[in-house]
Image (cartoon, rainbow, N blue to C red; front, side, top):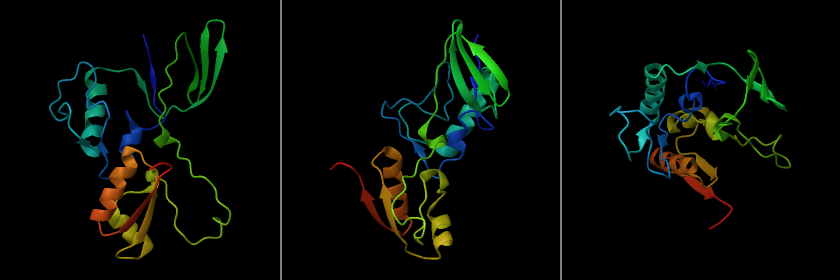
Length: 175
């Protein structure tokens, strides 16, 4: 027996809040869950966000997964019998704990000297929707955008912004 605790409103909620045109680009080239024969998510395909979100919801429903939504884990304590989790819906005890939190649900923006007084708009990918929304927020038809990072999502955003008319520069820690 197991239980899935989801801080959001639906299975894999972080996917529902990602940028509009985000795609699942798994480096393992496999994007279906066990026991899934859903052809909306073909194996080895770069699936778009909306289709993947729909797939996760249908998968959880079809398999009757024991999912507790809007259940935020506030703390974890190791006991003699396993783990005790303090959640927004009460305590949960278990012998085995799998922590599958993602970085997208916990955005990090480093602070820089003077950034509080700067008029430069700083967004984490979780606050970005699409090029149209960004142009509207900035009031510019061809904004200059610096994308910081080198993961797959940074690459996707870079291409999307470029295709959307932005002048884009990439900053990464290594060549």
